[in-house]
Amino acid sequence: MRHQYRIGFIALLLLLSLNSSLWAQESAPVPTLIPEIINVFPHDGAAFTQGLLYFDGLLYESTGLRGESSLREVDPTTGEVLRILPINRPAEQLTGETPQQDYFAEGLERVDNRLIQLTWTEGEAFVYDLATFERLNTFNYEGEGWGLCYDGRYLFMSDSTSYLSLRDAETFDLIVKFLVTIEGQPLRPQLLNELECVDEHVYANLWNSNFIAQIDKYTGQIIALIDASSLLTPEEQTLLDSSQVLNGIAYNPDTETFFITGKQWTKLFEVRFVPKS
Image (cartoon, rainbow, N blue to C red):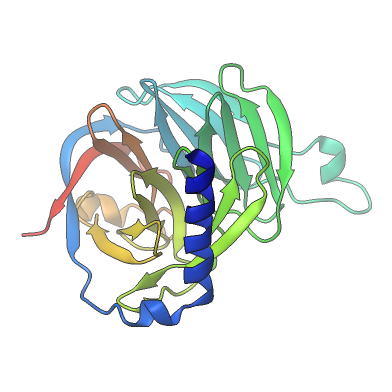
């Protein structure tokens, strides 16, 4: 049954990715949801959040910026960083005749007892042991790495384009890319950022905005937009610079709530997404 599902799902995505005209017929207005705040928790204001996931009572966070990137284990209710692994190149790679840029960590996801962390422009995804943070492997890929999520069968990845990539969870091999659309039109590039897979949907932070897209993972259609512009007060928003945008979304299946935050935000919000009145 699993093998049949795999063939059917991939065949569907291949068909849709090759026939973008199927999307053009879908032009109904996209409904707007808003986050209903359940709790507000502290968040490390130094964390340039690029990837966020929840598992077994803890948050795992990937933070970016060159020379400051990290992998973290965090207590969601106190914001305390319980473990941190700096993500840096060896010193000899940063100097010399042909110095390389330091890593800029990006999206993060858990597959069983492993964590997979993307890098922005380096084309490398690091694989860690969940319990120890020991690096186990490195996957290589073409293009940029932005967001990553896992639906229990496949990895979904954003890469600065209007497409999401479907990847093998064990090998990271690319299976297919499919277009994300909104109201029958392709979503413009450089929007799809941090991802979270929940049931039949992929939730995506839309970079440089206060919106999260709810995407049908089978068709690529955005079926709802979550307007999170009211999370911070106007006074709090004035304290942020242009890079400190909404980013980071993690789902807690026990409570059916989401944790959301932003790059170098001092707050983590536990929310439900509800219709905008």
